[in-house]
Length: 104
Image (cartoon, rainbow, N blue to C red; front, side, top):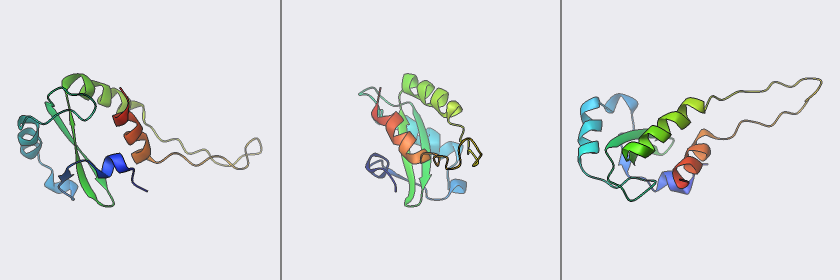
């Protein structure tokens, strides 16, 4: 399931190979509003979903927060053990991203 917040982001190229540094620079220079606050976005990222790519436009402060957040999003899969025979599956990365984008 793709969170509504992610689906509501502007469409971006569907294939990662189509996202070039030039395209990202052009998007960042277009003056969009940051997804997390009313500031002008100066950075653009693309999230790829089953429904295609979506742009994430962020101001400098939220871009720094996004990079810091993304560095901590390492998925650890816990295997069943005697102590925990039924471990919880990891949360969807897109749900975690939507939570990040919707809070400040």
